Image (cartoon, rainbow, N blue to C red):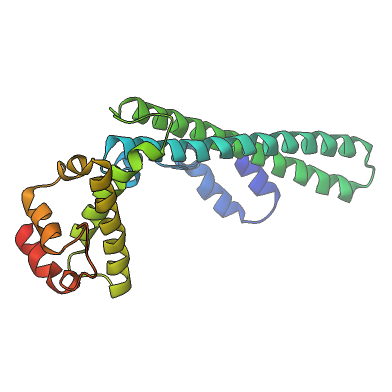
Length: 243
């Protein structure tokens, strides 16, 4: 399929513009075939699996599972659309053979060319989805997880609690009161549950003593506490000193 010939046949643009496009035809084809469709390996590891939201190898592993699952499901759905498109091309080709009206034949031919271009686009998308699926698998294989590779719940308490600590540190003095109290509420409950299950040391080993002292000073995660009156007020100053 010569894309420039198809554009030219539409009379959409002038002969001068066609000449301009012809002069850069190799570059246009390179741009089309090499433009980014989905995430690069860098985006997967640095943007998606960042250490603030996914602080442990296990949390990274399970996020990679989620990403890989979604990508595979989309590839599966694309295969149905690809088959459907191929059948529609065959039907149009049959219709073209039986059509006698010149204008109707021209319309059918346009639809055929459109669907053939769609077919090529689907093949390109499928190839890129497969690339990302393989990349996610490579990332998973390189992670040294310590919890079960089959039970997502097993790692979550430690991973989420570390994540909430990271987010509280990153928030500093910013964030609205509802945002801050929502985060503090999750972290408070997470620390209590970690203490209850005997895995609090796994959470704290990722942080220096200043951060731990900051949490204890503000009463976050204590066994018995009615309210946390000092947290919002003192957090910016304490966090600045702790960090």
